[in-house]
Amino acid sequence: MKRWEVVRSAILSDIDAGAFEDGRLPGDFVLAERFGVNRHTVRNAIKALESEGALRVQHGVGTFVADDFVSPRLNSDRRFTYKVLGRNKSVKREILSVYETSVESDIAKRLRIVPLALVTEVRWVSFLNDWPLATGSSHVPISRAPGLAVAFEGVSSFTVALRRCGILEYKRKWTRITARRPSQQEAQHLRISSSSPVLFETNVDVTPDGLPIKYEFSVIRSDRYEYLIEIND
Image (cartoon, rainbow, N blue to C red; front, side, top):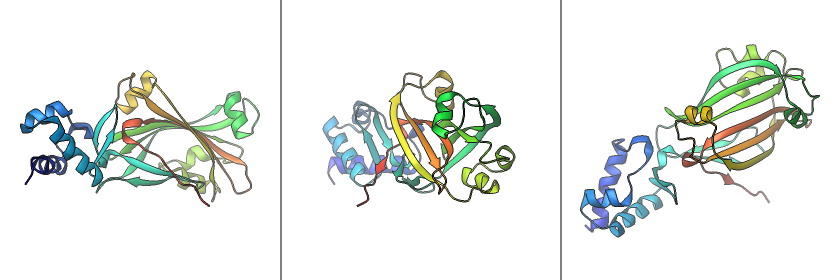
């Protein structure tokens, strides 16, 4: 067995044992010293594991266990179709708060309602198993989904809560993705440094007749996420 194959097997055993804290592998120098090989050998092992789907390499960021990545497909479905890499992994959302409030002009414009109109604002954090993946806030006009705050009792799913309000169908109208630094509160929710770059996503969902039903913004850990954009012919 070649040296890189020995290193590959050892890293794979560590992955199976959950040995890498927060899903991140040590740097090449650390791994090379541990296994008594050069960095080129370590890189060959990592390249093999990446091709097998066990690792994800983000250049300039680090190498991560693929179990800690989520790959949503960007399309017009009302929800992203999440591909959670690895076994026994799941994405779940925890509701932080639900309350009714007036909305600022920018959000009102996106929802096609008058400024200071009332909306139900839902703040949340999503997790990949026990690790935070994203945090954000969603806004739904009260006039279009009355009773939404009550509908969230006992559930964390927007689809379920909106169905309780009579909204049986909706789809994604548009999604915008940029990058920025997280606020201090966002960094705390995501358990990252405030200097770590994050993805910033905004989107609008609409009912079948084209009426905006939900405006949402999400702050997403860029080290755990990738987008697959499908182009339909």
